[in-house]
Length: 599
Image 1: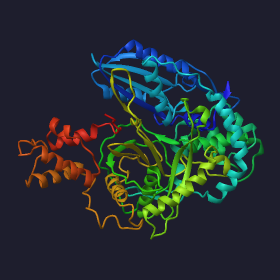
Image 2: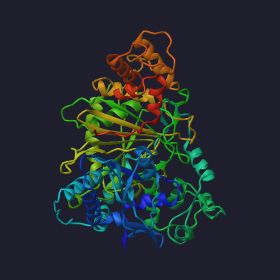
Image 3: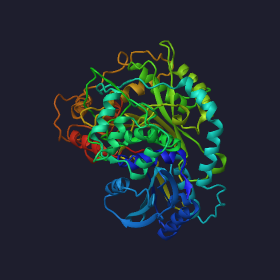
């Protein structure tokens, strides 16, 4: 038994509230073509499990606090399937038993005699983005018969070392964040109506379904922090309801009640863990599949707070972008600056984005595990500042922030208001690694498989490849209503414009110099308009065949280019050959998995 890491503690509390759903599920797909030795691959999976015991761990409560204990060993399953997408969806959404394990699973799917896919899904408690690279690299090494050296540090040892490092940095971190932290203003995102923070908290209190466990409630009653009168009343109610956010607020509130209740203060550890539940990867999960890429909403009152009310309808929208190379600026810094410039263009004078930073040390570079901390990055651009200049300013700011990468903001900022995430908008970036070498197999990896959950209100996930930068926008309704979602096609088009023109001012009117996008609520109509323009035909029915109308390969490439420019949608050429109708293309877009394919 060992104390959970800071990130694990926050995530565990969110899970205990019963509202995370698939938000912390992390799938990876490895496609393998050729004469696979299935037995050798299964043995390789077993070797990875032995090498990384954190995959066989679980998180339980001990005296009100989360601790890591041995759990069930991950399963390695061999199956056949005629519907890979359905199987991947099922495996991605299948719940984990956090307190018993296993917290990872391997499924080897046989699609044909020489076509297999290894579907791996882990819980974020024991896995992170860099762990994907470690997993694939280790699997390939074991499959190729290599022997790997023993890891120098366990995850439990890392967590203990982390606590010591954070304790040493805490005083300076408090000074640093004390000068920077502010409660985020409501954020303006086109398509979302106004939502105030207080309304979000009230809705969570009234509509959530989680329960405070007896251990947590007992800890809250007997330790050293204040529960507000209202929140404690919620915890004591016959239903015991508390949302993903509210439960952690009850555990982390520091004296915001009408009067002090010394006997009901949670311990400092639990109080911080509760706040960190909102900070460390605080997702609001949903399991619904994307129903459309064009979305409904109103831009007349597009302000919303970062506080989510209950579970969201999770959707995603993928497009390809070009990001120029700028001297002395990393591609991540330029991408982050582009997103902040986008927010600024919508009327957010001080844009804030949450980013995940790695907390790995040199001794755990080869480990699988959870080594991340969420930190806010805020800017205050001047109207005449270019996107490049904003990126250079952010570069300096990030280097200041990185000094305290291991310190949870909730520990550095006393009295910080709990929330499901540190900002309404979050950003992640990763470079696609080289394809693994599995002997004579032809392999490719899907590194960014959609888990059907959405972080904050709007999450920008960028995967940098030799074919361009693939951006996956994960989004959902702040109110839980599918009719209140961002104007995602407009946002994608605006971001593309900013990324292509980094020397432009952040205050440039994006709509004046770009082609006005068609109504995103009517994806079929928008695509029909493009077909009619390219083919030179006034009216085209939903089921009319493109080739019967005189279309050919060059026609298709023109349609694809216009869809990319106007709608921010990237459609493969094969879609038009397989389903050469407007209805077929629209159905393909709706049914597609918004994951980055590395084939």
